[in-house]
Length: 227
Image (cartoon, rainbow, N blue to C red; front, side):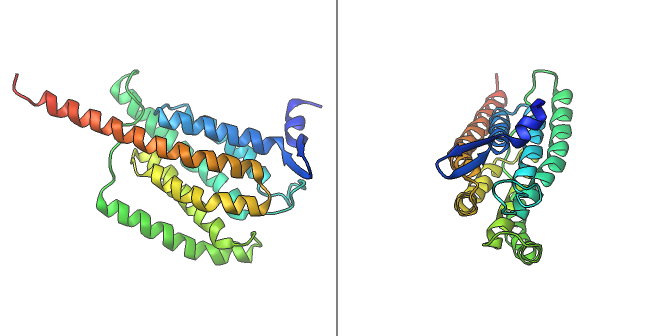
């Protein structure tokens, strides 16, 4: 059996629960990507894409004939969305770093405007309302609104990260608050545990990016003082 076949079939049995190793590995890639995002490293994007590809197969349990036959269509669809938006973020951060020199951080954190914040909030709620009946018609796991909420939040948070908006970390908090109970109820325990960890990690990320902004603002103010 080659490594790819092993990763696809390997299982971890804990009591009466069966967890796919690719669910664990996919989430670990996601965690590494989040760490790279915290440090504003370009490698965060390709690492995340690998995790997304693995998790796509996990959340279509009935399609890929896994021990957990529950389909979370929003979770599966968001992995595809992650890959698409991550390619955009990868290109955008690479362009920013090349423009500023090799040692320049890939992105400079900044606050989104109030107009953008309102648009993000409206997109989160409106997108959830639109996607809920679609996911339900396709047979997603209940409560379907939670699956739709997670999809929309993930889309907006990933886009916000690509743009360098510090608020994107808070969108992840909103995603995790809904994602943990949904994943537990659907039997995806490894992902639920990682979501719980992500919740604390995203708060740290928000504080870290906010401090970077403050240091940059202080340095800019100091440079404007008369010498």
